[in-house]
Length: 148
Picture 1: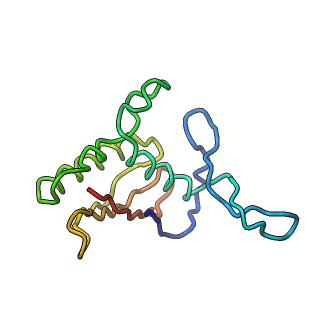
Picture 2: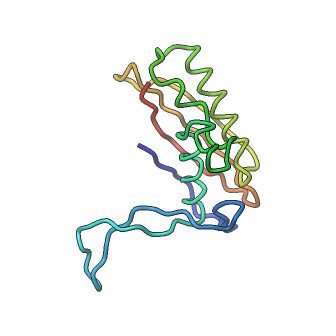
């Protein structure tokens, strides 16, 4: 489960990646002016694009896209799946998030990071972070949960 919050930015974040392509999101399908009840795809832009890019980078195993020419894309966060939720695991999760966020060229700085257990779910970490996007002083916040 992922979400981001914050306010719309003054500066557009419209570059999806270094090739200038677009990212996609799931959207309600439309027939004329009515919702069809089926999902379709749509483009995602701006702050939502950066939020999606960060979540995808964090939840993709580092090196798994090497055959596609992106050997450094991703994070080691998913290597914690199967580990016990303890201080060591939480510190490793912090390290892996920091490493991955540094790879994102649209992020100027990681301004806050909190990794904590989810109350009532001993095998789940809640990761909350805020970044300062490049060319934008308004922080972008993300919260997601990682089941170990």
